Length: 209
Length: 209
DNA sequence: GTCTATAGTTAGATAGAC
DNA sequence: GTCTATCTAACTATAGAC
Image (cartoon, rainbow over all chains, first blue to last red; front, side, top):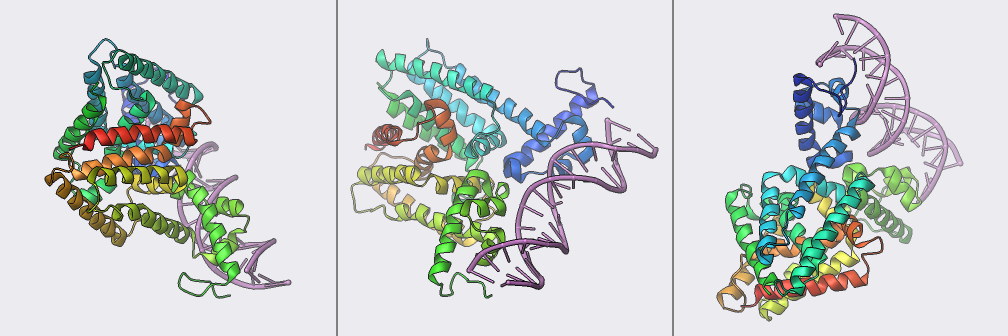
């Protein structure tokens, strides 16, 4: 009778069903966006009934918010991991590779996030937005320090980050266009290996001091 | 009584109202995606009534398809304009600038297109998809020829195009994230000038033979 | 060519039996 | 915990008066 909440202790079956629902919802939301997705689709994809889904989550928005929060966290982690004491070029090149790997392994998360940003980021809390901004600011400071120390070419730190995000996430977000061009069975290990070679070269040439 | 079609002769008032509707629809579709947009929103934005809109267009999908076709055309034009007899690096650098300018001047078109690709390009006709593929293939040939002639660094032509598309369209498609980071009044001439300096440097360093 | 009224669907969410 | 049945709201589209 009492609906489980995020903080309450959960039984094994509760955890399992919540996980099933979130997995199905990630499929649906990433493919159709928030408004384009329906509880019916999530119900069918998960194998649970619609009322049953609403027993585990307060509503459509609550499911979406849960997914979005998880994605934001995994999105920000690699940024914070950039080590200002490490080798400048190698740190950034490693960040590029991490982001590209995320695009390959978690394309649905990338697409859900892209959908959200594309439509104005209305559903991202001010709290999360501020968190993102602070982390970017700290990263920009690291990059500026490296540039000033002559360990990195003099580049605008913000536009460098935009370029890295854009060119790595592109492989997840624009997957349908890439398969349109490279062929149906495109986005396998081989294509990502080629992408890695290309991006590695692009950013090494750009960043060499 | 007889609804105007695309091919039929149109009166001045018909052309004017169709234009008003398409302009309003571009606002709405680019901000909310296809499913997230309603005829009510387009009606309010255009100042026309909902039935009146359906007098000029067969339905919601027809309006969207009209916009999408226009966007695909303007998207492909600059690709075809790359001149294989021109200076290799300068031709590609000019293409980068053209794409960046398109992002600044037509962000709504870019976002509508990004929404469409992101959600699987379901509404782009096979005809248009083939057209895109052929044009990309021709451009890849030009790039390979330049590389073979030593006028361009040896780079994978497809991943070069992906990188250019991603990094230029990013300024339109991820506008809400950019303003989140750079501040509310970010996407003006100054930011685009900085982006141009950055991308110019990035692709010159990459492409120098 | 434009309007009001409304038909016909589909959506999110709830009630209450089991 | 899970189900069937249902409420209410929103949406696309059409009918028919003016």
